Image (cartoon, rainbow, N blue to C red; front, side, top):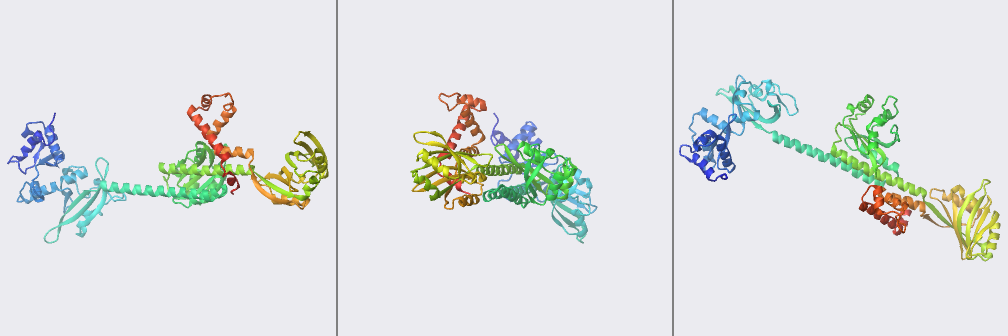
Amino acid sequence: MSDPPGGRAGRGVLAVFEQEVNVGTPLTTNEVADALGCARRTAYNKLDALVERDLLRTKKVGARGRVWWLPAPTGNSSDHKNRFSGDFSLPVHELFHRICDASPIGIAVVDSSHSIVFANDRLAEILGRSPEEITSRAHGDPDWNIFEEHGDPITEDDHPVTRVFRTGEPVWGLRHGITLPDGTERWLSSNSAPIQADDGTIEGVVVGVEDISELRYQKTRLESQRAELMRLHRVNRVIRGVAKTMIEERTREDIENAICDLIARSEPYLFAVLGQFSSSYTEFTPHATGGIGEDYLDELLNNPDAPPLDQGPGAMAAKTGHVQVVQNITELPYEHWEKAAEKNRFHSYASVPLVYEETVFGVLGVYAQQPIVFDDDEQELLQELGEMIGYALYTIEATEKLRNEQLVELTFRSEALARPFVERGGEALQMDGNGTVELEDGTFLQYYTVNGIATQDAVEVFSELATEDVRLLSTTEESFELEVHTTAESLVSQLPTFDGEITSAEIEDGVLYFDLQLPRTADRESMTARVQALYPDLELDGERLVFTPRTFRHLLESQLTDRQLTAMKVAYLAGYFEQPRQSTGEDLAEKMGVTTTTFHRHLRNAEERIAQELFDTSWSGRLDSE
């Protein structure tokens, strides 16, 4: 087991430096190894361990050599004294070399012939060359490969040493790059000052060089990170704006137009287009655009020389459901697209699928004025943006579907229509409309279930109300069914124009109330005016939206996920709810390709959602809100 640094082995090494003859004298690794009677590598490891413990000092000498010394126990002045062997009375030449060798800055001296006559070890380390290689060249040798911060080479006339010789003034803080022999680049900061004779003649130039590569790289990284944060902030700002737009705008057209305008106003984007591909992906129908690109879009879609759309990134985004990016449009293999893009200053492009639940509701094209704009992070954000817009379009589509299938129920009242029934004992009349059939001659067959009045009395009253004939279909102890063949002048004959139908009627306190259902999109005012022309005393008593089974079905489909809806359908059709059950949960899970636990979770969630829609007391308010 080896001794720890500073242990017995360490003390043996320190004893070498504490010998009177060696105090304050730098020793080479070989000298220490000889004194200890060990291998050079063993001595090196022990010395290095003592340096780690701050018990010794070391520095590199030449290309491969290194010296070690024992630091003085007190103060900075003693420390410097040790570096110079404790003797400042050395010859100037030797003292100069020792100072330069100890310097943490690279130092070079250029004589009046512009030759490099001196280079210290630190400069050799910085430049990746030996001191001999450096001093064998002139400062303006093109092999140095020196260049400015922007990459332009520094010519001999612009070299700081040349400028010092020319002006006699120092050049401070020049930052430049240099290509090392191994091909890597290093960034330096140099200060050049003249060496003047007593008569003011410039005899040479001394140059101090510091390696600032790490500082520059850190600065570059910080600038890159700052730019990245700014870019992500910009994209997030677009997403927030889109989210706000989807809340404020009500129609699909308004949302699509607002989204395109918002994106086109956000740098570095120039143009946005939103639309849909045909099932074959060979045609694209734009719904909205924003920014400067209408001519480009027309050239893309309507020029006979344009390549097929199904080969482009937009079609690929629609097919795959993932963002497709062209980082440099000029590199596309289609000359037509390239020329059109250059004309409009487009250099990069992203095609964003508008997806919800694996359904693509459209594609958003985003064009930028710079190449390589859409990196991985921005693509992820655009994918999220596409999913957000896709969900909004899905919601609008589902809502419109529900609205188109909802019915409006109008309740009318009339004393005149009630009077003939009341006169024949029908004060408690109740009727349910079972349906209406239009005949080829323009007349109608209407079917009712009636109670609260004698059968014969009801037949006589209906016969007087613009009818061709009345037929008794069936009777029970509580009610009877009638077929009423009405004429074209009857109230019922006015309703088919508006897809309307009488669903029920009753008499209360001598007033006949009847309910009329018609599509939500029907012209209610025109329909009301028409029936009031036949019966002037008719008054509109109430209006409400009707919750029909078909509407309920589409509502549930819009609220359930695809897996929840599939689980519910499979369970119903396969007899899972029958007693006894015709299929087990395990059977149905296998059919769906999921685990039994997953199947039951989807089914329970679907049942909970259906119950919520059935029993949530806020439902009518949701229907009436518009």
